[in-house]
Structure formats: C-alpha cells, structure tokens
Length: 273
Length: 325
Ligand SMILES: Cc1cc2nc3c(=O)[nH]c(=O)nc-3n(C[C@H](O)[C@H](O)[C@H](O)COP(=O)(O)OP(=O)(O)OC[C@H]3O[C@@H](n4cnc5c(N)ncnc54)[C@H](O)[C@@H]3O)c2cc1C
Ligand SMILES: Nc1ncnc2c1ncn2[C@@H]1O[C@H](COP(=O)(O)O)[C@@H](O)[C@H]1O
Image (cartoon, rainbow over all chains, first blue to last red):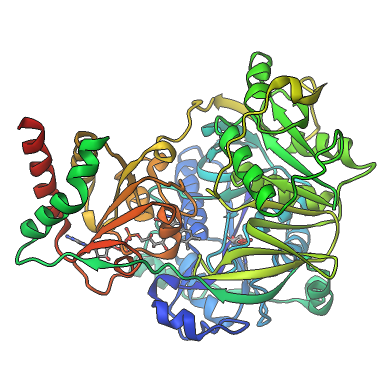
C-alpha cells in the first residue's frame, strides 16, 4: 500500500504579538522571520500515518510512506526528519511563489504530482493551513482525483489490504467507518498526534537518504496560469480587534482577588439563575 | 441575485445552522422576494419519521425536502448536481459547519464556480461578489473576490441567529426521495454510528474554559467537577484535547464549539485568536492568567493576574458557603 502525506511549513503564528499584526497591514503579510513549524493538522496527519504503519508491521503488510510539500528549501530540514522517522520517500516541489491564498494551485500541483509519481492508495493531509485558513485544498484534491474525502479525521488504521478503518468527527458526531481505497483523509483535531522525535540512531541512518526536489515545470504546472485560474482572489486585509475593557481586579493575594470577583461580579448572577 | 440555501438536516444542530443563515440573509437584505421556487432552501434528511419535525422547525418558507440514505457528501453532491445543473442559482449558501464547508467547496468545483469557506459577510462590488473571512488563524480579516459563478460559500461558525417561527401552512415544500440512490464511489460502511446530540456548550449560559496551563488530566477532571458544582459547562483549548485530558466535544474555538454564554471564565488560557474565536460572543469574559502579557487579558472584560488554582479554589469555597448559608 502506498500512502502519500502532504504537509506545509508555516510560521508559528502563536508567537506573534498583537502589535505585529497591526503594523503589518500590507499584502502579503511578512512572516519570514517567524519560527517555522509543520502546520498543526499536517503534523497530526504525519503522526497518524506513522502510527498506522507501526500497527501494520505486526500484520506484515507492505506499506510505503511518502511525504510531500510544496515550498522553499527551509522545508528540507523537516523532510530530513521525516526520513529519519521512517518515511521511505520525501519530495519537495520547489516553489517560492506566494500561494497562501491559492488552494486551487496547490491542489493542482498535488494532483499533477500524484498522477506522475503514483498511483497512491491513500492521501493523508491536514484539513486547514494556519496562514491561508482556506480549508479547501483537501476537498479540491479529492475532487480533482475524483476520490472520496473524509474530513475531520482523528485516526485511521489498516484493516485489510485495501480497507482502512477511519475515525472522524463530523456534524453528526464521532463516526467510525470502513473506507475502501483510494481516499483522501483530511485530518482535524486528532488527540495524541504530536509528531514523534527521531532518535540519534534514526537520524544517522537516514543521513545519506536524499530528498527529491521537483520543479513545477517537470509537473507541467505553469504558475501564471494557476494564478489566473484561482477561483477567488484576495483583495485586501484588515486587522481584527478583540479588545475589551480588561478591568484588572487588584488585591494582595489571589484569594482576595477571587473574593472581590465573587462578590462584585459572580454572586448576584449565580444566585439569580 | 438568485440564491439558494443548502441545509444538512442529518445533523442534530440543523436548526441552529438554519437560523444563522436566516440572520445572515436578513443582515444582507436577501430575504425579500422569497417567492415560491425562487430563493429556496434544499434540505437533506435521512430519517422518514423526522421529516415532519424538520418541516415544523425550519425557519424557511420555500424548500425542497430531499431524503437520502444517510449523510454522505458524495451522494449529496451528486443529487445537488442533478437538481441544479439545468438552471443553477448565482449564489449557494451553506451552513457554518463541517458539512457546509465541504459541500460548498466541492459543489463549486463541480459547477465550475468559486468557493469560500467560513464567510462572515458579503458585499457586491461592480456586479461581483466579495466575501469577508478570517485568515492567518483569525489574526486578520481578508476580502476575497469570487471569480466564477456560481458563488458558493459556507458561513463562519457560530454567527448570530434569528429565530423565526413560521406556521406550517405558510410553508411551501416538496418531497424528493433519493434514499435508494447509490454512487459508484461507495467508501462508507459505518462501524459505529454517531450519537445524535447537540453540543452542550452551545446552549450553556456559564462556561469555564480550561487551557494548557492547567497542566494534566487529573486537574481537568477536578475542574469538570468544579464546573458542575458551579452550574457551568467545562470547555477546553486545543492543547488540552490534543493531550487527551478532555474529549474532543469540549473543544472551544475556530475548529471546535463557538459559544455565547452570559459568562465565560477562562483559566490558564493564553487567548490565541483560534481559541478566542470560540468565546468572543460571550457577554462577559473573565480571564485568570498569571502572565500579565497574556493576550487574553486585553480581550477580556474582567481579569485576575494570578495563579488560577488559588482563584478557582477560593471561588468554589465561596459558592459552597453561599449555598450552605
Ligand atoms: C489552524 C488552527 C486552528 C486552531 N484551532 C484552535 C481551536 O479551535 N481552539 C483552540 O483552543 N486552539 C486552536 N488552535 C491552537 C491555538 O493557536 C493555540 O495554540 C491554543 O489555543 C493555545 O492554547 P492555550 O491557551 O491553552 O495554551 P498556551 O498558549 O500554552 O497558554 C497557556 C497559558 O496558561 C497560563 N498559565 C500557565 N499556568 C498558569 C497558572 N498556574 N495560573 C494562571 N495561568 C497559567 C500561561 O501564562 C499561558 O498564557 C488552532 C491553531 C491552528 C493553527
Ligand atoms: N504548500 C503546501 N504543500 C503541501 N501541502 C499543502 C500546502 N498548502 C496546503 N497544503 C495541504 O492542504 C491542507 C489544507 O490547506 P488550506 O486549504 O490552505 O487550508 C494543509 O493542511 C496541507 O495538508
């Protein structure tokens, strides 16, 4: 079984302070100096795939894991780590264009890659990226490949050669279903899916494994055309203001502050309910 | 512009989602001209015995009741295509939930249109539609132009609601049975069916929100009990769920529940935008955090800068004394 995991390297937006957003009110937002991380849902997709592979070793099923990203060379550090963690192949499509708000282009490139380097049986990815916030790519990949798509995935495991048990959360609640490949799994908030850390031995043994760098051209992708065909276009950006009164309750101890909070703001309300 | 609304009544929260759409339509002056067959809703439902209840509760006048076997996006998309391909509307509005997002994007793709997910507002500029939504994890708002018709979008989660009680006799609806419809892509065999419940957090008037700073699962279960004693529901931030200290249905935020209680008391939460999204509709936000630079402090109405444990322990004691008195 061949599994492709898609991930994106993003700035860790939790590290940015309010004021940095108010002054950067330009298009596009400059985040080059912010620490990079794997997009949170993609991190879960990578870890859930490794977990699935762990289990299938016992079942002696053949699994080939590939990791794929579109972006700049700073992603290679992460791809190296994935090789150390047991991914058989890692690919990066070299692209320095800003495609944050062009999920159509991203999906198109992914599909072009999957048809040239595939066939894959399963594509696991994140349901949303933290900077683009598009929440569209996984759905577009499924549509372009005419594959089914399961969203909000929280876990999956192999049941048989072409059968995957997938847990996901949708508007009806938590669901478990058997999915015949091929399928796109769009991973959401999946508990216990922080990406594992490779051991020194893993890192050493993966040291001479190569990352395949692919050009857009070789996939038959023309950026100008992909930008023109994007179905929506970002026109302007504005800051979000969440400021409220921020009335600080002062006191000499936590207990005193709590008492003041209770007396002034909670007691009456609690008893009137 | 001619528009249609799509409702997934397989979801137990369909009424709330429909009320959000109704409020959105009103804010955008889209409710006039609600003539039969023109601006209509297409309602997907699975269980025959629920049809009457859905018809009664839906806040719409003109709609199609489309019966399917069970919620499966691929089937809904195929049916929608069959129903709409001849004379599509210019705008399709989908609810602010996961099925809404999914159907909006995939339906637009199938009709060569454009899609946007989690839209808060729309405007019409030079005959083109512009949708406004949060980007950069909720740190900014972006305005997006839709390039191709039909324009399909889902609403942002937890928008304001308008409750309308429309008498059944004023409702104009037709039935369409697609329950035996199958498609060649048949990925789903359900092993475990979902429980049919609305999220408790959405209805609560008092929410205690626990963040990563609470530290471990034992502390979260202690806070579950404290919340119960105070008559509150416990919500949590993403790290709490990711560490499996609390179940997923207690998650608050852009990817969890969006709530609007009278009081939301946050404990050891930093207040990042994706979390804040879930609580920003609270009437009063009280935040306890020991870091005076935590962003939540500016975004709250009342704050205590101190150890949350000491604060909550004192609060529960005072409330117990009050009860005993
Ligand atoms: C695409 C995307 C979607 C996301 N969706 C969501 C979502 O829906 N919901 C969500 O919650 N997050 C979401 N996140 C994650 C979000 O960005 C933050 O990482 C998260 O909300 C942080 O949670 P926290 O405040 O509990 O933890 P932290 O940011 O680690 O904050 C912990 C806080 O506790 C305080 N603290 C520690 N100990 C104490 C103590 N003893 N007393 C008082 N204060 C103390 C600290 O000062 C700190 O401010 C999303 C992220 C992305 C990228
Ligand atoms: N540059 C990229 N390279 C690889 N995968 C990506 C890229 N951008 C987005 N994705 C995938 O698409 C998902 C959804 O992104 P988005 O539609 O932008 O919110 C992400 O979680 C990733 O799995």
